[in-house]
Image (cartoon, rainbow, N blue to C red; front, side, top):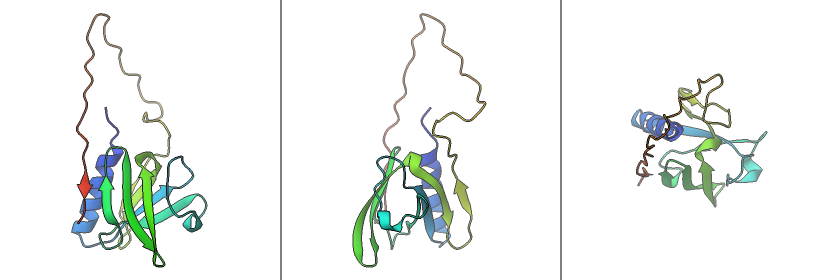
Length: 135
């Protein structure tokens, strides 16, 4: 199955914005391919305002979140692999979701999926890329 995190991030984002709150994204800035202003990282973590007024060209796919934002008037391109997202939450209420920091997609003590019988055909399901653009 495809990872569930991007679906949950998108759902919480919409829910927070629909309730006129400010969505914040907490990101592990130490992971590879994360592009954020390193001078704003504290203890390996950065918290980003992803409200429509703060995040220009906000874009989310199954694998990545990207947008442009400003820190003290200086524009920055932000690139966050989904696995680097630690949490999404409302600045106003604190409600949101914290994501598992386990680097694998399998939860601890997860049962091993059964192997298909020999000779069976395994079909791979490819879902279309979802894109959320905020204008």
